[in-house]
Image (cartoon, rainbow, N blue to C red; front, top):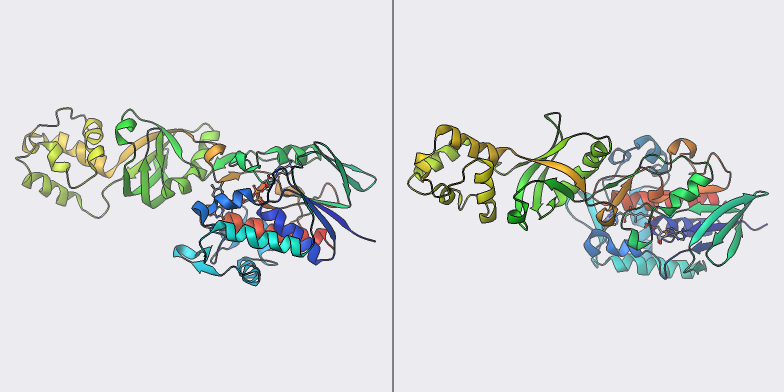
Length: 402
Ligand SMILES: Cc1cc2nc3c(=O)[nH]c(=O)nc-3n(C[C@H](O)[C@H](O)[C@H](O)COP(=O)(O)OP(=O)(O)OC[C@H]3O[C@@H](n4cnc5c(N)ncnc54)[C@H](O)[C@@H]3O)c2cc1C
């Protein structure tokens, strides 16, 4: 008797789930609301697709125990091997990040589409699944204009990040209606909005700095690298990494700050010496050559110095200390983030308590499986989120396909 498996959503996890279920001999079909597969994959890694991280382990994720049992069956090594078999030569860059050698995310989508066709897996486009129900051990899948039946269903509708890609969080409702709990969700890997009066003047300035997330005067996350000031707040790779913890605390109603340390490789005494040597110059000129021009007036205003022409030597010790304080400890109140429209990933999702960690089958309904971002699994930037999508998709497909 044939085993009919319906995969809902042709993103990274859905594509792998379909391929792997087919490899088990199942009769698989995919329902996808868009007119093409892998729309979000095309946007990943700035169009280059950081498709995995060669050093990824379960410890890179919010629920390591759960990821561990999936990675032990199909981890980054197997993923890279499988992609190589499809023709994707990996190019490994800093911190283990792997990209296709062609540096085109479209290569990944192209080889996957070729493979789906080669395995004769029908992809039914323009099929938005509105409802999923179960009758006599049979799954009934209702799309906007049709109805399908299947023995098993793999729900791979993604999270809520970048909703224009097709994953707008509707899958959580499908899971919820079938008795699954959804843990609180919030955007992650996203730019942050600040409450700060001089942002307009700072817009577009990029610095290499230390960025610290401060809560109750304690540093709870620290990153070093590019920090970008914008007219609404702050961005850059450092900030994206910090944004998960920041958004979680905001969700809990906590007051949090981002501290930017502009000077990292000069001791205070060296700067004091610099200000002494340049004593005859206006204070704003004593900062030129040290920090980007557009930051000088905001820094002086923050230090409560409004006459930028004051001779550096005439500054009181207290005023000079205030300038140094800003250079080594500039704090901004975080009020919000840019939200799902600009987030790379959704934190939270289908509660893992009701999902089998070995097979990814629902503990509520036999024959229902989950994979990818819809589950309460996420990680920071670096190829980890796609790796989870591939691994979980492969495992859900493997068991559903048996
Ligand atoms: C801008 C950006 C850059 C990123 N860069 C990287 C990166 O470089 N490396 C990395 O590891 N991760 C990256 N990510 C994260 C990564 O892309 C996701 O975690 C991953 O794609 C999730 O895969 P998924 O299969 O779970 O969901 P998705 O890829 O979101 O796929 C879900 C699919 O389901 C379809 N769908 C949804 N609802 C329905 C429905 N009701 N009926 C039918 N179809 C439906 C959607 O149209 C979509 O095709 C990035 C994300 C973004 C937004």
